[in-house]
Structures are given as structure tokens and as C-alpha cells.
Length: 315
Ligand SMILES: Cc1cc2nc3c(=O)[nH]c(=O)nc-3n(C[C@H](O)[C@H](O)[C@H](O)COP(=O)(O)OP(=O)(O)OC[C@H]3O[C@@H](n4cnc5c(N)ncnc54)[C@H](O)[C@@H]3O)c2cc1C
Image 1 (cartoon, rainbow, N blue to C red):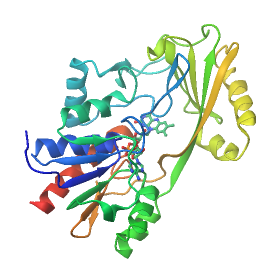
Image 2 (image 1 turned 90 degrees about the vertical axis):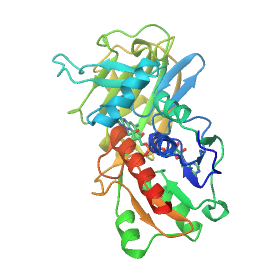
Image 3 (image 1 turned 135 degrees about the vertical axis):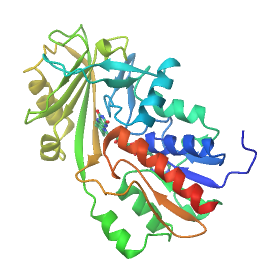
Image 4 (image 1 turned 180 degrees about the vertical axis):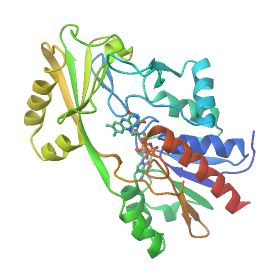
């Protein structure tokens, strides 16, 4: 255990921030993590309507790299992850799709618990200049991190700023439905991935997935449909999603519902480097899934890289 006072502050307790905290602990560097939300996980998100529980951001993750796979398997032995399925649809490809247990927030929470970082939930950072850190790792989506740095008078140099400002994000609207009775027509694993559907991207029955004790449907609109419907009323979006979902499953009576508009569902294109740094006292590192590989595993790898870089800069 490190007895040094914290020198590094991590903004965000999603998978990028959790990975960074974990690696800093391995390196013997103390860190503080500040998170706006009331739990870790970020866009690996959980939601609840009454007794119904939903994975309402990322639905699963893959493990291509050795380091990520090893950690996910270690988390599995402690009950925080498990393989959800080996492929969606009638001809599964056999490749493992993992999930958090009890829900998708679990992996980030597990990494933070394994780290020695101090985690401050419900603690949004509004001014980086107020932090007494010699290194700061920014992990929110790039536009959010860039605004925070700019508002704090710590913006990146113009060349990097231009590249960061050019990163665009796809949108996803998530529709959450609590159903009166059990759902008919779902595959046994409870997931339908719709790669070729114009309107929908994913349907999950969180009951069959094992997340919820009662039927709870997550419907992700496609990026195109999400963009088209972004400014429509919740009622319009809800009716659209239910009608389209009924092409795939028998959605019965809906007893409760909610909509989340994910403005930053994923980058359109990723930057080639794994993270980027600028400044001195504090040194800043910006990381996340927009660097060198999107999605959960890309975010994890970026968080590890960010921790390595900031530790090296400050050593
Ligand atoms: C709808 C949806 C579906 C997805 N599906 C998949 C999928 O199936 N598989 C997959 O691999 N990936 C999927 N993704 C992408 C995946 O969720 C992300 O790539 C990954 O979770 C990003 O993690 P992150 O830590 O970089 O960012 P985030 O998870 O966004 O974490 C950043 C954290 O920073 C916090 N924060 C922001 N501002 C501040 C501040 N000022 N102070 C303190 N904290 C702050 C936020 O609250 C957040 O918790 C999906 C994303 C969405 C939105």
C-alpha cells in the first residue's frame, strides 16, 4: 500500500478512469477519483424503475487484448463479470461477449475497489485549477473534457486542441420499458443485436440477461434513427421504439418507461494515439474510448496508457 499523499486526480469513474486508478495503484502512485454520478461505470450504466433494473448504456464487452482479458477473468473469479453469450442470433460466432455482474457498472467498480484510489462520488469537478494535483487525467467524452480544461484556463495547445475538437460522436437513444408479463420471442440469452436494421441497434431483456428480477426491456435506437428523432418528444420516440421492437419480439403491456438520450455514444473516428498530454504543474492527460480503439476495451487500454504516461512524467 502506498502511503504517499495523492498527486494524481482522475476525472471520471467510468472504465477509463477506473483502469487509470488501477494502474496507478500498481505503480505505487496514489490517486483521487472524482465522479459526477452516484456510482462508478459511466456509460457502462445501470438504471432502475421500481424493481426493474436495466443495463442502459453498453450492453456487453469483448476482450481482445491479453491485459484486459486477464483482468476480466480475475474479476470473473470474484463474481464481478461473466460471459453473457458467445454470439447473438441464430448462428453464434463463438466469440465471447462479457457482461458485468450484477450489471454493467460492476467492472469499473471492481477495478476501483482493487485500486488504492480514493473515490469521491457525486463530486463533479468544475475547475481543474482548484485541484492540488501535479497530474490530472481527464476521462469524460472529449468535448466534455475539452470544455472543462478550457473553462479552467488549462486548454491544450492549438494543434492538439484542433484535433480534439474534430472528434465527433454518434448518438444513441435508449428506451427502457418495464413489462407487465414476461416477454415472448427473445433468444435464450436475452439479447438481439441488429447490425442491419435501419431503426434499432439492440434489444435486451434484462430479466433473461439476469440483471433484473422482472421483465425489463432496453431498446437502443440505431445511430441514424437517434439523430433523426433526437429533438422529438419522448412520446413520439417511445411509440416509434415500441412499434419497431414489435417487429422482433412480442412486447406486451408496458407498465413503466423512460428514455435516455446518450449524446456521446461512441466516436465516429478514433485518434491514433492511446492518450494525449500537455502542460506542466499540473500535467494533463486526456484519455477515453476516442483514443486508439473505441468501446469498453479501447477505453480500458486508454486509461492504462494515461496512467503510465502521467506516472512517467511525474517520476
Ligand atoms: C448507449 C450506449 C451503448 C454502448 N454499447 C456498447 C457495447 O455494447 N459495447 C462496448 O464495448 N461499448 C459500448 N458503448 C461504449 C462504452 O460504453 C464506452 O466506450 C465506455 O463506457 C466509455 O468509458 P469512459 O470511461 O471512457 O467514459 P464514460 O463512461 O463516459 O466515463 C466518464 C465519467 O466521467 C464522469 N464525469 C464527466 N464530467 C465530470 C466532471 N466534471 N467531474 C467528475 N466526473 C465527471 C461521468 O459521469 C462518467 O462517469 C456504448 C455506449 C453507449 C452510450
